Amino acid sequence: MQITGQGIGPCANVPAILYYFVQGITFIRIAIPIVLIIWAIVKLVLVHKSNDKELIQANKKPTIIKFVTALLVFIIPWLASIAIGFASDETKPDWKTCWKAAWSYNTEPVEFKPVIYIYPEEETNITITIPNSDKLLVSYPKYIDGWDVKAYPDGTLIDNKTGRELYSLYYESNYDIKPDMNVGFVVKGEDTIPFLEEKLNIIGLNDKETEEFIIYWLPILQNNKYNYIYFASTEELNKTMPIEFSKEPDTLIRTLMMYKPLDKEITVKEQELTKVTRSGYTVVEWGGSLIK
Image 1 (tube, rainbow, N blue to C red):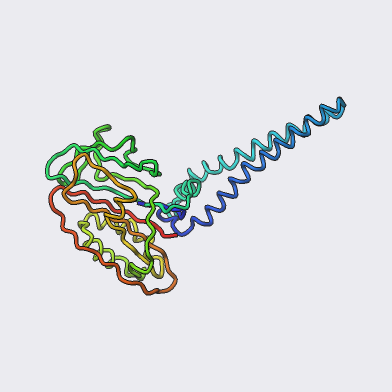
Image 2 (image 1 turned 30 degrees about the vertical axis):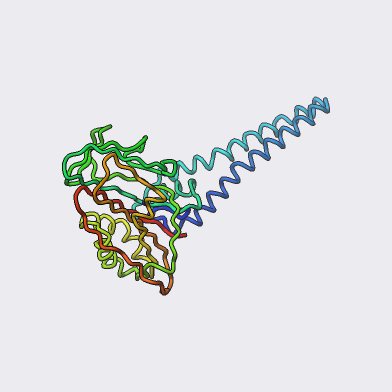
């Protein structure tokens, strides 16, 4: 899960600059055309009131130029966003994602890469719904009034709408959790792997889920000198972003790793994590978010 006014995934440390850049462009592409059009209309009215044919004729070209300029100022940033969207360089952050994140910037944090795994005890048709679906930013499969899947004990999912095989359900959304930064963990970037292996095991993730979590977040966390980390619990997530299942799981594990890069170590009270034992039909969800 990822959400910000901070950028997505590998863009987590650059979004503020990108945000202000995009907001500046937004202001320019709206304000300048409005000024040019008003200016052109006012001048056009005044010139025609004068009944001076030569002045009217002389004003035609400047008026056309103002309207064309207004149109270009509005369209060019949009074309630029498309060009950036098609740009691709695997050695750099995904600028298409960064650009889209900046355009949809909002001050609420964002849950990144929330993925949902479903493990019934037997082959089962399950419908999953998100009551606060208006907070969704992106989803796969596309969330339309819920997800309808056939789930198998090994975690395999079949999308009943398309027949496509899946291993998880994915979405990103806004959420409203504000951690007390006096409680949590402070971890050196170089210690990210053993830290996550230990804590995710306590939270209840299995080896596959832990591997996928680490693969996603390691490139982001290990490059920081230190990271403040807080794991939002199932209870906290159920309050801010509830998820409903047509068949309630016996074990529901939801966690959101909230982190903030630090230049130096700070002292916090260690967060107490309760060991979770999986039993019966199990649903697991993990995600993460940058603390602004």
